[in-house]
Length: 89
Length: 89
Length: 89
Length: 89
Image 1 (cartoon, rainbow over the protein chains, first blue to last red):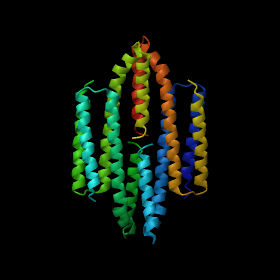
Image 2 (tube, chains in turn orange, yellow, blue, brown; image 1 turned 120 degrees about the horizontal axis):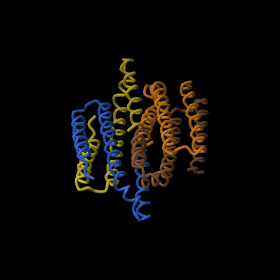
Image 3 (cartoon, helix red, strand yellow; image 1 turned 120 degrees about the vertical axis):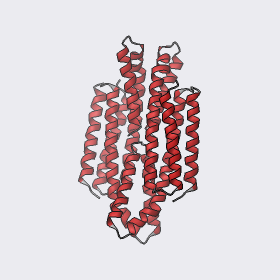
C-alpha cells in the first residue's frame, strides 16, 4: 500500500534527522538535541500507526476472510508482535 | 475472554506494586525503586499483548467476517488506537 | 526520600490494577482492559519521574559535590541507565 | 560536546530512514516496514542515552558545582523532563 502521506512524513523525519546532525556539529545544547530526537521518534510512531491502519484494512481483512488458517494465524501473530515491540521503543 | 494467565500476571503486578510501596516507606534508594516500577510496566506490557492476542483471535475475526461494516471499521480502528497508545506508555 | 504524593499515587495504581482484575473477571471488552492497563502505566511513568526529581535534588547533588569520583560516576551512570530503560517500557 | 559516535549513529539512522522510504516505494509488506521503523527508533534511543551521558558528565557537573542556584535547578528540571518524555516516545 503506497500512501503519499507516509512517504511525506518519512521524508520530513529524514530532513529532521539531518537538522539534528547539524545541531550536533554546531555543538548545540545536548538537552535540545535530545528533545529533537524525541520529536522524530514521535513522528515515526505516527507513521507506524498509519502503516498499521493500512495493513489492518487490507492484508488483515484478506487473511481473516481467506481459506488459509496458517496465513491467518501468521497475520494475527505479527500484529501482536509489532504491538509488543511498540511498547519497547 | 477469561485467561487465567492474564489474571495471575495482574495479581503478580499488584503484589509487586505493594512491594514498591514498602520500598518507598523504608526509604530504599530511589533508583532501585524506579527500576522496580519499570519492571512492573514491562510486565503490564506483556499482559496487554496477551489480551490483544486473545482479542485478535476472537472479536476481530468475528467482526471482519461479520456482516456489519461499521462494526468491522470500529474494531480495526480500536486496534490502531491501542497500538498508537502503546508507543506512548 | 519519603514523598506522600508518591505513596498516594502508588496506592491509586494498585487499586486501579485490582479494578482491572475485576474487569478481566467480568469479561469486559479486551480493548477497554488494555486501555486501563495503559492508564496505569502512564500513572507509573509519572511516579518514576517524581522519584527521579527527588533523586536529582538530593543524592545526585551530594554525589557530584562529594569527594568520591567513583561514587559520582556510579550515580551519573545510573541516571543514564534508568533513562535508557524508560525508553523501553 | 561533539561525539563522533553520535554523529555516525545519526547518519546511519538517516540512511536507514531512506531505505525505509524505498521499501514504501516498492510496496514492501507493511509489517516489515513497521519493524524497520521500530529499529530506527531503538537506534535513536541509544543516541539520546549517549547524549544524556555526555550532558551529565559535563553541563550537569558544572551546574551542580556552580554558584547559580537557578541554573542548577534548571539543569536538574530538564533532566527530569527528558526522562518523562522518554517514557512517551
